[in-house]
Length: 333
Image 1 (cartoon, rainbow, N blue to C red):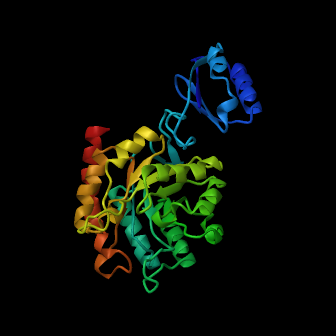
Image 2: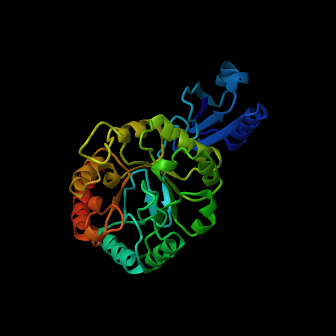
Image 3: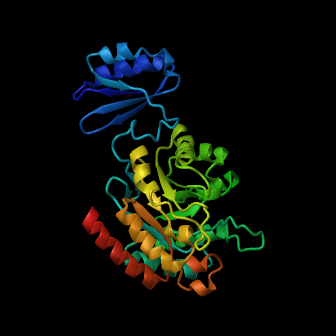
């Protein structure tokens, strides 16, 4: 249930209403917009007399919300969420490009790529230190050493770090990471999501390989319901009947999610297609479709990459793409 207050309501009257609603055993999510305040009532609202609430002088309207997700529901928060990572802003008209290799392979590699993508316009750096791999024989990342190399690259370039956490046990290693990524395979690791909800750190939540948009939003709800509202969603392709690409990039998810939630939407065309030549057209399409950002794999030597070289752009290819993205943003922004 949401309660929309009239414009210009005093803080005292607002506080009195909130206190009364909380006394009914409800949790209140407050969204202060430019022209109105929206109170999201979370919990068992059967005891709330809608007619009584709507008759109050300070109340404009009362509506029931049927969707199971509340904290990340745009009805509760009409204005776009802006997630701040240092000086970088994502959402609310702020577009961000995140770039870097699939896996951190050495200090020299990650520093070189970080400098190259920054020069091309990237605002954040991605790189996997812990890698979930289908085969137990594939390279699974440098782990703690990889995180240290990422920090060195951040020191060299000033770019915030985006990297994946796979296990709650490794959380202490991520205290100095700027954005924690939850990978597709962990989208419904609810114990992990609850723990991330207790942190005041931006989270990049990737859609699972075969998950619906509602399931993605419910996973975001786990994080937000535990106190952390700094969540960004990532569409990275889903498994379908396609036999020519790694996954199928669901571009319709971008405008659909913008209708359902106020959270920023990032698109990953690298994992979605698995083919470097397809990354630029899909990145441009995602930008034109209203994405708040892109996360793109870039490697300085894709042929010899230890992980996902086939879907990685070379630095010069990323720079060329970045110019095109800026041109598209100039048209649609």
